[in-house]
Each structure stands twice: as C-alpha cells, then as structure tokens.
Image (tube, rainbow, N blue to C red; front, side, top):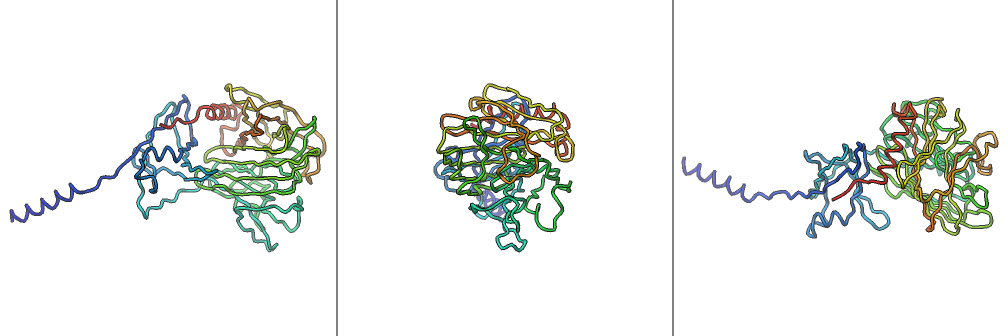
Length: 418
C-alpha cells in the first residue's frame, strides 16, 4: 500500500512540475484628468502590442482581460495600412488601470455585443427588399425623393448605444439625427416598408431633427468669395465601410467633381462613431481648392436665437444650442467641437425659404455655421446631440454643457498608454 501511495505521489509531483504556466503581459493605462471617463476610447497600436509580447508572439492571436480575469471587449482594425486594437473603457478620476494581454487559444473565439453599426440598405430590384451594402458608388443622376425608393431611410445611417445619425445620400447631403432610447442596434430595420413611421416615437426612439434647407447635424459646404456652396451635385460619390464592430465603426465618403464656382473639387469625409459617445467625428480632406470648408448646426426650431460659444481649453472651441427644438418639442442640445487653430469664423446663414425638405438646389439657410481651414486642407470636427429622452442629464442646458466641456478636455488629454 505504501509503495502504491509513493507511486501516485510521484506522478502528481511530476505533473505539477511539468505544467506549463500561462504567460501574461501587462499594459498600463492612465487617466490624466480628475474627472470620470465613461466608455472612453482607447487605441493601442500594433507596434505597442509587439513590443509588449516580444518577437516570438507577434503573429499569435491575443485577448485582453482586466485584473479580475474578465474579458475586455475589443476589436482589431486595419486602417490606412496600420493595425490598431480598439477599446471602450471606464475610468475613475486619475485612475491607473492594468490591461492584461494573453495569448489566445487556437480555437478560442469570443463574440462581443455590438454597440456600433453602419447601415446602407439598397433596394436594387425595386421589390421592397433592402440589401445591406458595405460599399456603393452612387449614380450621378440619383435624385432626392426618387420613386421607387432606392436607399432605406434616404441614405446612410450610423449609430451606437446612445444616438444615431444619417445622411441624405443625394445632392442634398444633409445630416439628420436618430434620437435613441435603447442601447440596442436598431437602424437595420428602421425605414423599411410596412414598418412604423420613424417620425413618430417608437420603442427605440425617433427621427428628432428638422433639417430643411439647413446643414442639419454637421453637413458640409464650401465658403468662396462670401458665398456658401452646398455639397450637392458631384460627378462621383462613393461610400465604403472601413470597419464595423462592438467598439467603433468607421465609414468613408468620397466625392469627386464637386463644382464650386468654376472649380472642380474632390472631398473625402471619414466618419467615426464610438461606443458610449453622444456624437461622431468627421475628418475631412479637400483637393483642388484653398477655400474654407463649412459645417454647421440647424436653428429652425429654436425658441431663443442663441449660439453658445465656449473655450474650455486652448485647443478646442465648443459651439452649441440648447432648446425645446426636437420634433417633439422637448429638449435637444446640438453641438460642434472644433480645433481652435482651424476655426476661421462663425456665421449665421439667412433664414430664407420655408425650411421644408429640399431638392438640393435651395440656398443654405437656418444654420449657425463655422468656417474651417488649415494649410494642409485637412480639418476635423465632432458633432454631438443630446436628447433629454436619451439621458436625463440633457433635460437642462447645464447638463449638456458639462458633457461638452468634458469631451473637449478628453480630446486634448487622451488616455496615456504605458
């Protein structure tokens, strides 16, 4: 019996001594601000991952965990020839967090809940069935209000767990807002035949903005010789989803042959929406001109004709409105955050016309707009929408303003990665 026990003990000892230990790597994340940061974007480059893991593990699949061993949602994106790992992480004021990197098992595949989404539904056969399109070249003769309807909800929509937006993808190129009361992704099924009108409150929310002849929620124009030119007819217009995932989604819009007072311009707009944010970012590149790019905020339903301008730090300027200006006459805040060194001027378009939907030929009206320019013809901005039914903090002007100030500071002081 003693001999048998000795053999069993020896086998157990051998198995313990030869057991391979899992190697865990650590990346340190620091919040440099004395404010809480909810769903804060974090981007870790492939170069940082390679440095952390060492050469022997550079081609292996990886996963990420917190200090308690809980899986952290992420996505791996390849954009512009660069590989990035994207996260949306909560931080307390001045918090330091450890992010643990592990080599993933070969067959391990973790599905994360989607919190961002891009939708271009196209009914190519005019049979009421809208296919989910990832890349599209718009026909030059596509007109607003074409029947039968070609694009679901008139164009391209993008959303996260807080808010959604859309662009009328025709020569109007206006931008609108989907107010949301759910964190679910819903826009794949909104605006389809035989579904409830999105102009009325639905369980998920509604279309909350009146756009009319304005620039709506960050639509684009050019300012040349004192005149505004809407991004209207172009020789070519292309749409492409660059990435779509649980943490962020990015789409690209390319326009060629945009005629502006005798010039032919090319414009690329890259739109990004992150989980947990009440807005989107727009990065713009224009070729063929040194004119000023313009974007703006609609002011059709304002009870008080007021644009608030803040300078929360040296690098960012905040411009916003707040009023009972939603289509349901409740509180809605609309805002732009721009780079101060790119801001040329703030103006107000004339209140002309009826403010009804346009055919793309109407002058821009009912808009507070900003002129943006830099020497490289590359500018950027963030647009935000705070509907009181999405978040009770937006029932007051102070609540909306607080969010904007914090967002401007976060942009200037991103999470430090060590």
